[in-house]
Amino acid sequence: MADRVRAAVIGGSGFYAMEGLSDVEELRVDTPFGLPSDNLVVGTLAGERVAFLPRHGVGHRILPSEIPARANIHAFKQLGVEFVLSVSAVGSLREDIEPLHMVVPDQLIDRTRGRASTFFGDGIVAHIAFADPFCPELRTVLADSTREAGATVHNGGTFVVIEGPAFSTRAESNLYRSWGADIIGMTALPEAKLAREAEICYAILACSTDYDVWHDTHEDVSAEMIVANLLQNVEVSRNAVRLALGRLPEVRNCACSYALRDAIVTRLALVPEETKRRLGPIIGHYVVQEVARWRSSIRVSSGSPNGMLRPARTGPGSSCTRGADSGAPSSSSAIRPLSRPPSAYIRGRASASGVCALSIAARSRNSSSARGRRPCSACRSQIRASNASTGRRSV
Image 1 (cartoon, rainbow, N blue to C red):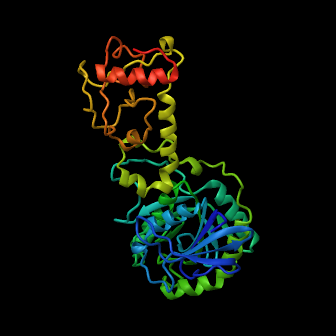
Image 2 (tube, one colour):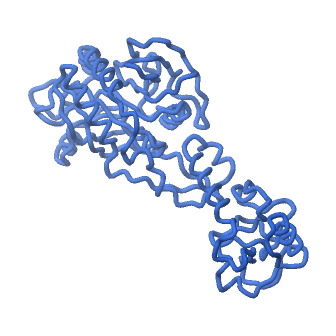
Image 3 (tube, one colour):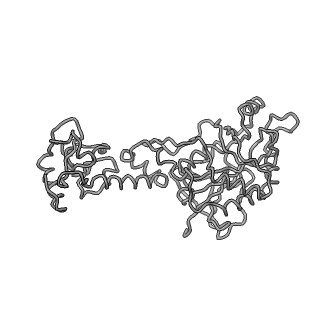
């Protein structure tokens, strides 16, 4: 595809196609987490290249618990998506949110069980901030667009997400009401968490179809009721999404765009290569930044005497242990000569030729633990060669 796909629409029950797309192409996107719910339909709408995905697959054949949410979000990330608009059918837990009303929720309660809800693990740990689970900027755009499309809109509300596929018992429905929940559904999670981990702005247009099972004078929810009411509202939903797509900001200023900046707690040098490959579209730019920081850290600092490279001690012993460093360098010392690329460092292992633990200095070359230590003769030869090529004084 020549054009970048900035936005995606996930269609829920009754919202199985996005009309009005031009320059349409259908894509099968493979991901490390399997295939998405269905092929992605990519086209142009409201001046934006948009990817559409039916959450339950064409023909509504995937249970809420079976939705491959990680594959769906990973596929969007591969395409360069920055915004996801999700359309979902929900039950109302409040008298004033009537069937056929629209809700743009701002909070979530997770009552799901056993769904894979993170991209992380397998050697990398991240803890995203999720106090506000929906993008505030995208929520505003979606609420304003839905109101302009002619719907009755409730801007804000708490969405309780249940496991399903069965609807709630009457006791559960009343319990959720006592918690202050406003709407109930089965699919907003783990979508919202995964979108945040992928640094994608995410918001939901929730279409109220029923009063769940708590209301004394209204019929209890059924699948037939949901689909019938959704079909009445599907054109309003499409118009709302179309308007919202035309109002997406050119530049994102929300915290969604850097959600992982302070969330990843594992040093990327220690992350297994396979995990890095699997999460490439999500963490790739952070890996590049770490390489750049490492390159910067091994330049001779202006504070070093005579611009000389200094050895840095990396272990409790004072003797040289050439080739013995089988792990990644610590945060206080990198042990690669300036002429050596940092690929081995990023992989978290020493190069094949091996360099002693007291060789080329890096981040703590002025530390007291390094002073007075000298590398072995073989490593001093490497240091001399490296310094000679740059005109620096040798050790």
